[in-house]
Length: 440
Image (cartoon, rainbow, N blue to C red; front, side, top):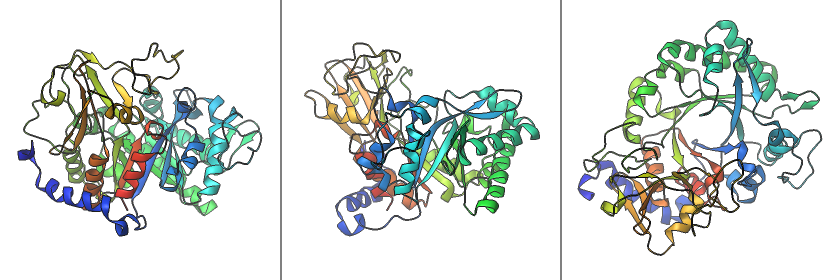
């Protein structure tokens, strides 16, 4: 597939290699790039990944922004924010301490750990992501539809998460430094209201800054699919925020009938599929064309794989018809998860617990398994695994694709990158650290 190399790709291969081998470059301090990572609130349960792990594995040293997923937007008569799971958010005293110090009652759980992490990393900005894939769209629509609704929602969210009025008798001032608005996604009827909602959040955060002297961050998550971002006035919306978190993953999905690369940087004439969202390069060009500043474009990178089963043995498993999403595996890659039911899963399974998805931590183990073929698509920039024995195929980001993507971010003067999600990396945070190194 080298005949399809993008001209930029030829240069980036050399640059990516240079970054990996040059000690002088590796020690260069961070430029002003966003290095963000989403933390899944629910990951502390079955996955056992806590805020303390970010300190243990050194990832907290690399991040500029930690994005906590998710806070709720309630569809009440007075739109408001709410904590999604109070138990793990601030009530669970069993979660490990970040600093080794005991938590200060009555604030425990993830929120107590975040305050400890911020003490150790005073430059780290911690944002609460509101909404998410399972977020209440009705709440967003209702809140954004009127000036009073927008004002009420922004006020509620700031009071709860920034001022830290968590619950009766539970306060955590300065817990969060701002918001990631994750409305997935506005309809055509919401286009103007979405921009107005961002403006209301920006106005209220700026007013708070005058009282506290602190600067607060506002961002929003934006799609790669043109059918979805057509409903957002991207230029006007970008004016209200510090940066956008723009999806660079899920460009192929387990429910698709044909295997494809889920986070490809470039297109290729060898790709017979033209459905759904385009490649990342096309998304970048489309956003910049609308007037979104390059410095506000942050590229999403996945720490998980997308996979299919029933895939014929041809072209490394790529662009082949598939029977179904790949089954959930054991986390050590040795076999199938007996019971991936999220309510009561078997022990030792891949922590995403969803057919068609696999953590990078498990992918690392599969790479070393007998009979599994690893292949790197240098034209489109993506890694794949194929097992001819059980006819499964996975597409994911590898150290090689990360090196090229971060070089692309620097070359195009984009704002940085972020990962979904930190708990899907290996225990050492290896891929996240490579992304950070590539943006230095």
